[in-house]
Length: 352
Image (tube, rainbow, N blue to C red; front, side, top):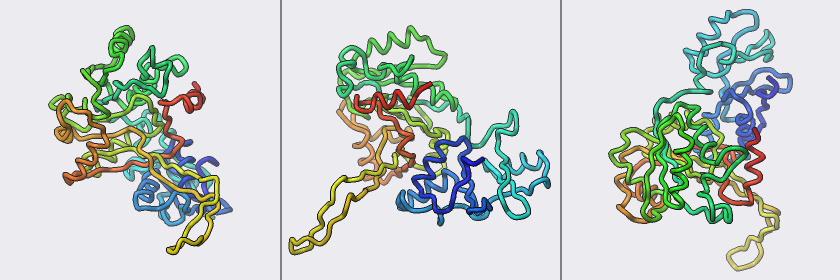
């Protein structure tokens, strides 16, 4: 329970990291005496970030100050389960007469009852994995193997990616291939997986979105698209529901990054004189990680047989008046395996 209790002066960034470490999708906000102040969900954090709040501000103004609660020794297991189910929450604080949090009710207490947050199966949602690139940042390995088959522990990158989608029920995979495509096909033929794999072969490199045009009329529901050299440790079911609920045409996943310049930066006034010096300033960004949810009708905007990145597609869709959503995640939830500088770190993060 201690891992779920946080103070109201916790920053958005700190809260995101704490949520990533829990399996509940919810934190409990308490004062110094562990008296209940409210609850904070991943949805609360996303709304705050998308409203323009910085990652370094506190959660004071964004957490739910009127959460559902139960009084100690004054409820039945059936009442607790019914409250979780009807209110669609993942966690209920148990409080005593002094409003102090003494316990928590979560879905894990109910065998056979599926949480609305964790382990949710969203059904047969297609997944497209863009696996046709040369992977020049991972040379010399990619002189021999396609980058999606570079091993992490006992499995290639692409199997780590697929397993995260299998966990939410996805069974239908489209792999766009070009560079060393025969090796990719041979690998999956030998693997003989219990999920469906379809290959979309580019005759020449078409960028990060050009080959998606081949899927027109093959897909009739929103689907995932992911690069083959990233692993996102986030709740894919919540991402998909976020996309559908908000009626977006495209949703991209963005990592909350903070960059600190290790020098004092000089600010000038209008006359060219020094105004002031910012000592080691920090800047916050949302960085596109390479994981998306797309509606099938957006594919028609992709030109035929033309090199075309997904960033081009998003810009063209914006010009056409389409809705583009952003799903923020913590920076620790994104592993970019596409360069040697971070490959070893990725191996350590994915220790079995």
